[in-house]
Structure formats: structure tokens, C-alpha cells
Length: 280
Ligand SMILES: CC(C)(COP(=O)(O)OP(=O)(O)OC[C@H]1O[C@@H](n2cnc3c(N)ncnc32)[C@H](O)[C@@H]1OP(=O)(O)O)[C@@H](O)C(=O)NCCC(=O)NCCS
Image (cartoon, rainbow, N blue to C red):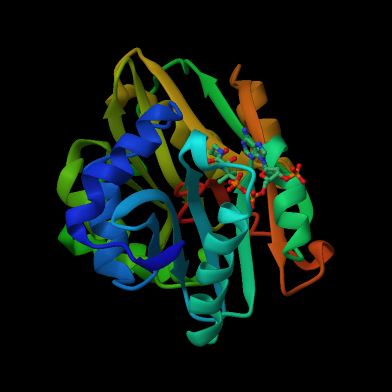
């Protein structure tokens, strides 16, 4: 088995793999991953036939791995492990010592063999929220962008401005900010999918009161449709607020970490919706 960098010419293959798993990755997800970290994704091939992939992202001191897939007929012979090793070497070469991922239950033992430990459940929730506008909520535009990026850096802990800018370009109507008395206190970014709106990410800096106000205002922009998001179970305020709004669990995976004790992993309480399992 040969492992090489994933190129833009491999994106069709990558999409075939994700589609076969029922995952909803898009072409632009892969294009943006390659823009962000051109050498962070890998293809496994036998001869010239591609049969697996993995992607990784370095945000500097911490990073994420995702999109690990081996074609069914090639599974169970160490290829997934080999792909993971390539991603981990890449992250190490970038000085990224803390690596996180969201694992399906069946893959937990594979990641444990690589030294990952479980932090908590990573929940996928869905709900339909009663819309209500708020005078604090505004459409995100260029004039808010600098504040959004600096708030995100503070709460998320890494620079994911490329992804946020791309999301704003593609879905300006579902990109919203919340202003407190003197400054920007939160933002939400959504995208329309088949039959639902995906909210990702959602970040709030101040008291949960602002988050309470933001969700119905987002629902107003989304229209009366289901909102789906991912949130870490250890963000108790976020989970409580979402449950109060009638959100229910659709599925969950396991947030795992390597490089730091699981107890030390607590995304900021201000992250009410993750960007994606792959991007964190
Ligand atoms: C996960 C996956 C890439 C592993 O590939 P592989 O080449 O079989 O991996 P390895 O031979 O190195 O390791 C086998 C391990 O894969 C895991 N695994 C087995 N079946 C799996 C499945 N259907 N889905 C996810 N993981 C699985 C198990 O941990 C297994 O180890 P075990 O036999 O000790 O329990 C492959 O099963 C796959 O593509 N699954 C579907 C996509 C997926 O679930 N990806 C992981 C998302 S977190």
C-alpha cells in the first residue's frame, strides 16, 4: 500500500467514499481543506488504484483528523491504521501536539490503539425553533468580519478565518452576529441542506442569555425548517439551552483526544455548535 497526498484531482474519489458512507461532505469541503492545509489529506492506493483516505487540519498547537475511510473490500488489514499514522506524522511535523477527532463507536478501538482517549460524546442534535427577531441580531457583513474573526480566535483557540470567510461568501443570509451593549458578543453561521438548515459554527462570548436570544432570531432567517448542529456534551449550558428549545439527539460520536489528558479538553463554553467533526 502506498500513501500519498490527496490532490484536487482526487476529490471525486473522496466524494464517492463519503457518499457510500452516507456522509454529507461537499466538493467545497474538500477544496477548502486543501486550501487550508494543502498537504494534510492523504490517499492510500494499491498500484494506481485508490482505496482509502484520511484528512487532517493543523491549527498550530492543536488539530483535527477526520474523513478516515477505507473501501469495504480492503478493510481489516491495517490500512486505516496506516492512513492514521500518515495524518499523525503530518500533524507532528507541523508542531501540532494535541489532536482531536470525532469517532463512530466502531472505530473507537482503532483510535485507542493510536493513543487517543475518549473525552465525551459529540452530539448531533435537531430541532425546530419558534422564530423571534431580536434587535441585537444583524446580518454579518464585511464591517463585522474583523470582530467575528477575533471573537472566534478567542473562543475556538485557533485561526479558522478561511473557513468562516468561505461560509459567509456562500451563505450570507444565514450568517448573523449578535451585538451586546458595546461590542459583538456572538455569531452564527448556517447553510441550507436537503430539508434542513445546518448551524455551524455558533459562538457566544458572554452570558447564556445572549445565546437564548440568538437561536429564535436565527430560526427566523432559516424559515420554519429543522435546524441541525453538533455540540460537545461537556458544554452543559449549550446542551441545556438546546434541550429547552426542543432539540433532540439524532446520533452521537465520541470526541477523542491524543496529546493531553481528556480532563483538560474543554472547548470554550462559548462554542454552542461545532464547525464540523472534521474541522472542529
Ligand atoms: C474505520 C476504517 C477506516 C478502518 O479501516 P481498516 O483498514 O479496516 O482499519 P484497520 O484494519 O487498521 O483497523 C480495523 C479497525 O477498524 C475499526 N472498524 C472495524 N469496522 C469498522 C466500521 N464498520 N466502521 C468504523 N470502524 C470500524 C475497528 O476499530 C477495527 O479494529 P478491531 O478489529 O480491533 O475492532 C474502516 O472501517 C471504514 O472505512 N469504516 C467506515 C468509515 C468510518 O466509520 N470511518 C471512521 C469514522 S470515525
